Length: 560
Image (tube, rainbow, N blue to C red):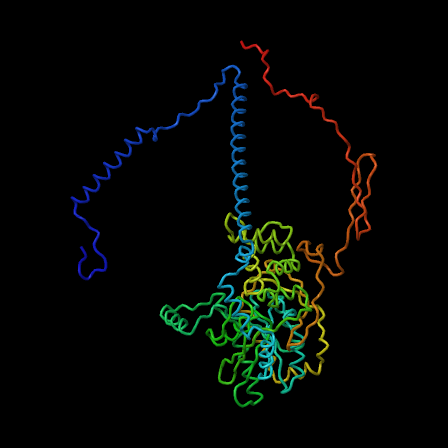
């Protein structure tokens, strides 16, 4: 009975009712045991004692038993195959009957995509923000409206994140704009490599070391967490939440605004290729999720103004579109070909694996030795548990995860800095000197040193070495692009993931010599100078009668 004021009724019962239930259960179990005893279900099967050792002709008996068992298994297998063949023939007849009925309707029904896929495709095609013309115009708007252009570079490949067309457009533009480098994701690169790249970049423009926060929530969620943090007295300093280099960057921009005596707020435009951390930088400086950011590339479609402080306003921009004339490795990391379905994820993964050391990839992902990219993805899918029905590894999901590790802020890899850096053709010493005017470079150097002391860097041995392909060409206007680079041949695509040294791969010819004095056949190979010599097979006469089998039982043996 449900009492007033309680959400649920009580489960307590009287003792007489509980005892009655227990009695009924005992009687029911007793009846089940009795029926099982009558049917002989519960009886244990007697163990076969086998043939005693002292029994005569034991080997014959065992051999006959094994032959009977093998015959039974063969008959069982034949029946199974016959049933499978019957089912296959029945299925063929049904399919043939269905095709004869209305083959066009059945084919159209198979090729008809789902309604959700059609809606998504229509929305994507109808959205003008996905067009190349819109993205280029938005990027040009940011460049025109900004006083300072901050080109954000991924610290794992700073040279590959530079866009010569963008830098040249900023230098030749009106308004005497300043260009600034920001080296993001420094926590994924060894410390020595970061220091070398900072020295190399500072020869051209001022460079700021930065590590953006990747786990910022909305304002309401942050306020709720801040109340609990103040009560507990705990400050969250985990790797994803912590941000380093923000004070140095804001001080640098504030000092420049005060030195120039500019009225109003200083407009700072953030530019760079997709997934270098433009929106994450604004969120880190703002202290909340002001811009939409994530692992997926190309989330930002239009520019967005965000007020950071009283005298600094930052403008977020969509990613720079990579030109089709770039190498395949640069397109896999910088372009949106995978998102636009112009290239499959498997091709992008195969291109990336060719630029890395095979042993380092094996150690990083803890997979065994692999021959090609498909085998690596199979091992990787089994390691992460990406399995389909029947235990088949899901290589598509594994390839997407692998690509997200490389483009997102997760995997540690680095590119070596040039030993003797030189200025690009659109730069001169006078332009560099003019661009470095108005900045407090001493404060910037001290701020970078403090940032490097605060960040926890990965070990050199745990970071993968990537071969950089140089600066990536970008598209700033909707014009006809250059033709893409020529596709590599099948022999090049099926190579291993080891580093390819400059100068190409040397062709080696193998020659197999015969051990006997038999004549040899020379087989010409196309496009190669070497010839392969194969040994002529020697006929071997095997007579079954000559083979002596001594596995039968000798009945002439006397037993005593």
